[in-house]
Amino acid sequence: MSDNWVVLGRVSGLFGVQGWVRVFSHTEPRHGIVSYNPVFLNRQGKWQSSTIEDGRAHGAGVVLKFAGYDDRDQAATLIQSAIAVRRKQLPPPAPGEYYWTDLEGLCVVTLEGAKLGTVSRVFATGANDVLVVTGERERLLPFVKDQVVVEVDLGQGLLRVDWDPDF
Figure 1 (cartoon, rainbow, N blue to C red):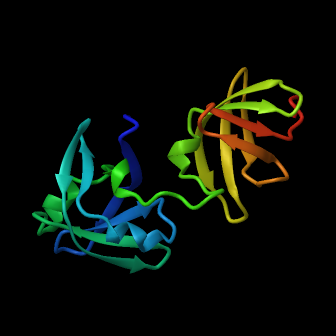
Figure 2 (spheres, helix red, strand yellow):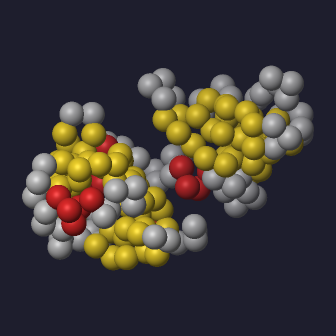
């Protein structure tokens, strides 16, 4: 994916018979995805502009209604589509905060200078976000600032961690 795109979620299923879909959202809060327009849907490897007509939180997830998808059969064609926006549509993060996409690809090194690999993805847990670091092996590091993550230097493409390389 180009640095220009930021994936906010994906269509995970159908909701009702009037073209609504269930969405797994990466935004915080989860229903924040509703506020973005236009969005882009990745359908069969191609990004297509789309408009969210309506949406809301529903249980632990989100349901959306996209313009032009007015029945269940039309909406079914969207299942597993990624939902993204252009980077310029996002507000700048507050100081000390980062978009997950900014962390992906950073080189991860310990305080002693041992290279652990690069951040391949980030995911949320109930307690904290987790960095998936891929190197000679895969490691899962909690994104806990000042305890594990000591420094994030986006300009240098570096993430310095207090971590035992043997762990």
